[in-house]
Figure 1: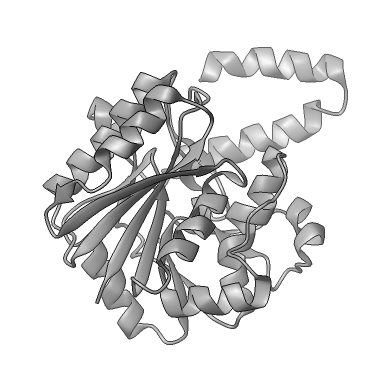
Figure 2: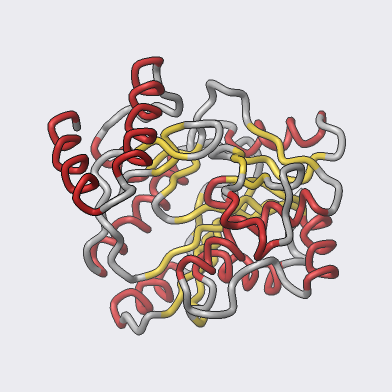
Length: 293
């Protein structure tokens, strides 16, 4: 059995997020921390991915495929060429640069097109989410074998889809389910079925960030559900996909909120809905919550 671990990257600065925050349904700390201000930061982030890969024992042989969406970074593109062909325990690094269309989800499509007949499974993630710990692949593959109609194993978590995505994707309450970051494990067999139906792995062909989320992050795992397969979570208390910025700082990642965090989030959300009805009350609300952060 051959497995490809796919890491999507891009040499654009990322929005600074100091702490992972609560998001999704069910609610969890799935809005991950991140900090990459320039090309050097992102090069170091990719190096960190590779070092973590060398340290872990995934439980199955795999190649690490790093795919770079081209933003004309001379340093970044040169680094991608340099690491291509690097040997790692149980496999090698394959790295290439592609046209920057559809963000990470366009990258996933390009990787599949290039290697669809070489690998039996693909594990998708982004450079700022590190899938680590020993047996991170064996755990997923074991779940795959046990679960009937398994289509995608979410390595962050599944989530109900917000109604603003329903109309563009033709969803309803029964079908509105996806996975955070489209991060997870899927077989080449199922990906080929998606490709046959859609002509690609779903991603946005334009330049809108919101459309990238709707037609990529949301649509990709959901397209597997639409084929009649199930989106499966890892065991509730098992965290295999960790924010890279937390790992770099030695911060222990917590997936689920405690009771206080859960109800405080609901309180803030309801207060926002109440005060956001006009600009004046919204300003008062936003100033007041600074004292509770």
